[in-house]
Image 1 (cartoon, rainbow, N blue to C red):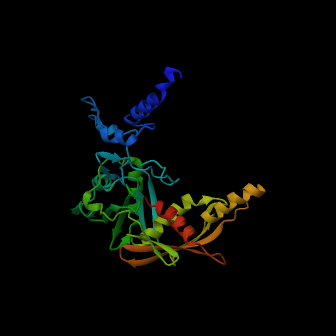
Image 2 (image 1 turned 90 degrees about the vertical axis):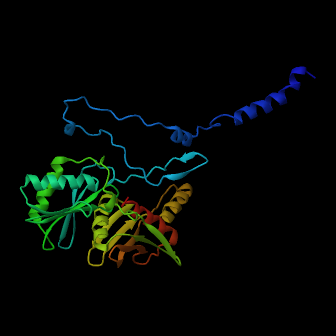
Image 3 (image 1 turned 180 degrees about the vertical axis):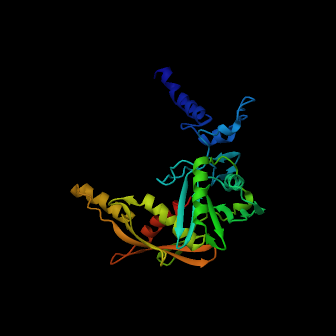
Length: 322
């Protein structure tokens, strides 16, 4: 027997052992990169520059859902899916309405918005009679301006009321002011205005049915979902917003369910014809208190919605509020 061949098993064992001692193994472990990452000092503009003219070209979003470290290794957060509505630039200004109530949604943190409300009052020559930054209330001689976190993370709601009624002219002036300022979301939020329950959706199953419990008043939630569904449920033959009823706080959707998508896939392998049919689904919001609403999904008409399809659709809809 060739003497060289005698050493081949030993060489193989050594190779396997040394491979196991590699820092990352065969695949690079990115969790170690997060654990060993270092923070560099921020760039400083030269003296004499107007700092107000500069802002982050690519602001880093806040990280949510960070998992705790185990054995000194930080788990990297999972990426969050982007919907068409979420891909907009920060600083956008949009209107919301439910009945006679009107307000603005601004793509910026409440702390940033509060500073701009004070600037707005000064520029308009309004006399401030009371100011409470913790509650987000700025009372003037003409109206009460208020700001609070919106349903979607990092956004804010702005109202302008007098005697409980929305002041249309004031709201229009605020809209123009914030559009002109084009706010950045890089400023930290007011801790007092960001409760731990913010943007927390709880899924519960009762029998064969799923429901989502959301920590928001039903009117605010209906107005925001109405806007987000109009943006996201606009794909013909896949997901569409067919009707909305503010009186019953409900929406009628045309939705290609998970079960139908899977059936269409296997059917196409045999017949080369997807034959997928969207199902009509009714989303219903039910108030359970001043700051709690239950969202359910049911099949409309003759079609029933399975528990699997309910959960998948409710997860998608709840995701529009992140």
